[in-house]
Image 1: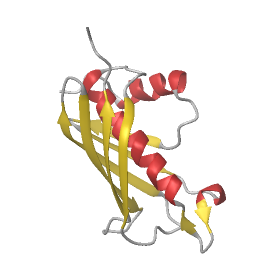
Image 2 (image 1 turned 120 degrees about the horizontal axis):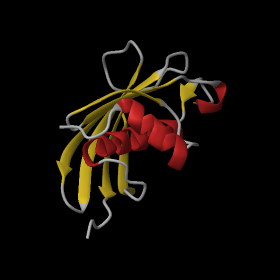
Image 3 (image 1 turned 90 degrees about the horizontal axis):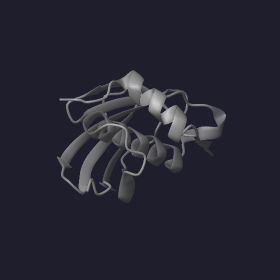
Image 4 (image 1 turned 180 degrees about the horizontal axis):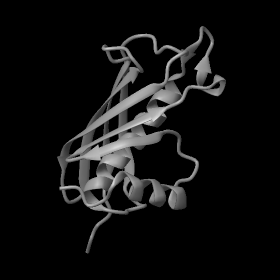
Length: 137
């Protein structure tokens, strides 16, 4: 069961993390989907979406999936992130991120994020990451 809606998470992030990129498209049980409208600032030479753009959206999307489950927690932080670049992300398409929590424990959350160029069936990157959750005591 989610404890925060997409709208509530957007409002929370505006307060604590206004510089993040992307738009929340939806949240669900251990899941989140975000999109990012690709602009020139997101491109590397060759009109491909840059690696930092992919990793940044994936990181925020997983954070959103976690917030949907645990509520507003500004101090849940990334402790590990690994990105596998699978194919060229198109610079003329929006970027879509689908996050899924694999483990949500008392101190750690582990998840994966698949990233897609909008309209494409095959992912452009696969990100796995771990978040450290603050001690609730």
